[in-house]
Amino acid sequence: MKITVEDVNGLREELKRLAKLELEAVTKKSLTQMLNRARQGGTPVDSGELRLSSAISMDEMGYGKEYAAHVEYGHRTRGGGWVAGQYFLKKNVETQGPIFEEDVLKRIRKI
Image 1 (cartoon, rainbow, N blue to C red):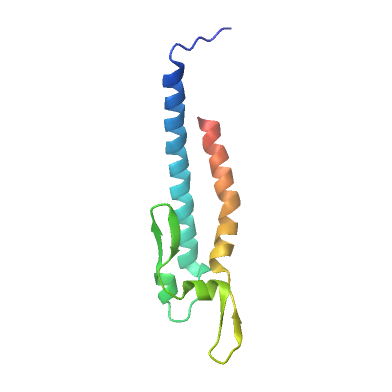
Image 2 (image 1 turned 180 degrees about the vertical axis):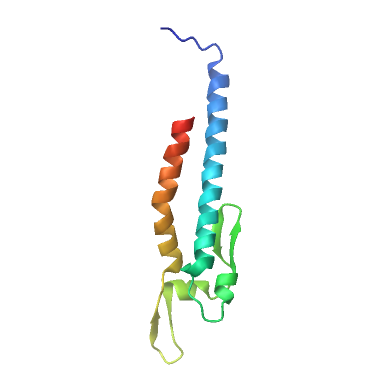
């Protein structure tokens, strides 16, 4: 069996285009899953404002509240004590990592 490709550059560009579309779809799916996880119990709640500030912007998922980093990583108190971080975003990313990897592999197999 012999395969002849006449337009190698055209094939290369089409494969790049398809790969980019597939990666964008997997990324959007992962971001949506992370956002849903954050809003359904994955974000610590005091007033609920932090959870409500979760959002997707372009290719990122995060929190709009100015104190999100303090809750994530920890902070000093006015009395000089320390409140440990809750790592809610880190845990969400760690949960999503294997799912993202599997989704990418599934998409690659389809191409």
